[in-house]
Image (cartoon, rainbow, N blue to C red):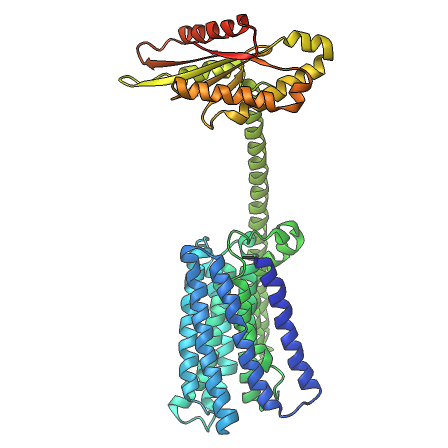
Length: 509
């Protein structure tokens, strides 16, 4: 599944859809109320194929949050459909509390189940370490929300019905819950883990919903007519959640923010400053509301400011120290990785022939020891000793570079016929050896024939008249009678017979 195409075309189509909506708004195409409802429903429907694609991209339990958000989007679509039907078909716009509010409430609950799973499965930072800063921000935000939104709603004389008051208070409470979710998302991960595409898109979704709800409430409270301007933006909430699902954890490596050090650092400082910004906002709002110009109040503000600045400097110092530690840790990890690569290269060079890239004699000797049967067990071990016929003549006639080329081609041919677990090595100048674990004489002879045929088929080797003499054998061994010298002698005698018989052949010993 090509997630890149889904992201690219999904963003393009959806923002094109929103642009068409605003074009209709600008040119006053009537009846616009019907268009508004229809566009809202289409916008909500567009998120479902993207959610489906996002769910398929995740594995196991990581599908849970996106499934919950999909269900929440479906419940929201039902509520919007009912609202559009009552408003445009029946001609009676629902008045709170209505059946739509029930679906909105259920949708909210399901949405927070999805948020719970998302935080549980993706945010690995311990929330206790940052809970106090988050608590300050939440407490200050709750004070602003209560005094400037909830109290005016409660004090409205026409809202005497408790159910009506509850339905009106639902949105600010829901917004506050959204704010908590956003703060948990923001404070619940360190700088490098928060700034991932998935987290950022989810944060944007929360901010859009929070802003639109707040805008609508303020418009109702202060009798501001905003008409249909924000209507197409309501579908942004679930659409951005859907786009967030298109970034599985394996892809959210936030390369952009790792490379853009200044931006990541600046946004990290915002998190440090946020609780203090909220605190001073409350203090200034209190001073503005009650006209507190008394010197003691101003003195108290300045004192809180100095204490806050001291704490901010401590936090920034700690942050810089942590970043320095991380950079040193990263540097050490890189050095350790380079050291591992160097060690692997040394091990490779110590056991692999540099010319043919087959094992050298040292590694072959070690392999003999590893292939020794365990006590009480017996096994076959096939051995092939291979010699390039008249190799000195090839060197003298065509030169050493051609001789090296011949040895490489012979090594390639050996690699092409041996099995995956067989051990092939260069035993000397023009002599090769192959160890064939669990190969009886029939298997050993079959592989030997394959090698002879591979040499004959190689057009480059035919140019230089390359042939092989091979001595092969298979020994049935136990722990007690496992004798490397005896087995090598048996294969060597077979090789000697092959040479004595005129070369370009194999002999089974």
